[in-house]
Image 1 (spheres, rainbow, N blue to C red):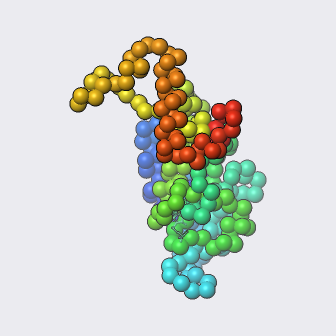
Image 2: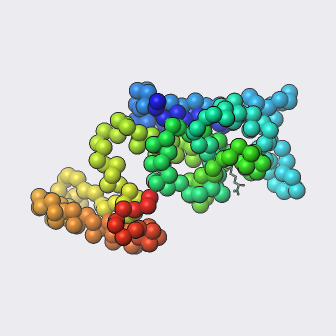
Image 3: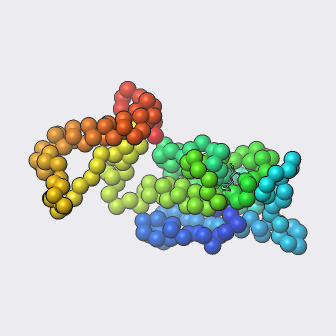
Length: 236
Ligand code: SAH
């Protein structure tokens, strides 16, 4: 069975969006993964299809109601659904390549896109949702985060990426940022390609790339080097 994504959202028209184009779009068309959207508003019961209400305790904004969202989740993901339930949320654990790889190896995901100030805490707990953050900044809704997460997952699915090897060498796969890339022309605006890359000496090239990756990682993301176990197999 291929990877099955179900996205719960107030804006289903945002999907597949970028996921319908290029690598992810081709894979969707070829059946390497499937995408279903569920309109949360369809599970409101009042005449105005209300999905939100004012925050208990007061304050600005609105909160997504637990009862409406729970009905949408229960409809999309019955109790025997083994897929993880993700809630896109700035309070979640930041998404890592390691988690992306785990998700890609699983049956799929149910992804809830928040809006307003967020979601009633009780439904997060009652439906066992894992909060996942895209990073330390605030989006206006979970949809762009869900699209980014699915893009990262789908490219790892079997047969999706043309050159399988390129997935192994990328940033984070070995707990490091990737080395810089160059291509023709050999000289551009007075800047040559580093000589070693033209040497044809594969051992030297590999050593240069490793040094560059270490230098970049130490300068930009020392936190990644700290997390690396001794054997060089990164956690991410
Ligand atoms: N009041 C909240 C932010 C709500 S933003 C807070 O301060 O934490 C509205 C919705 O956008 C959220 O419910 C979430 O689904 C989504 N969202 C915003 N920023 C995000 C991020 N960094 N990662 C993932 N989802 C995010």
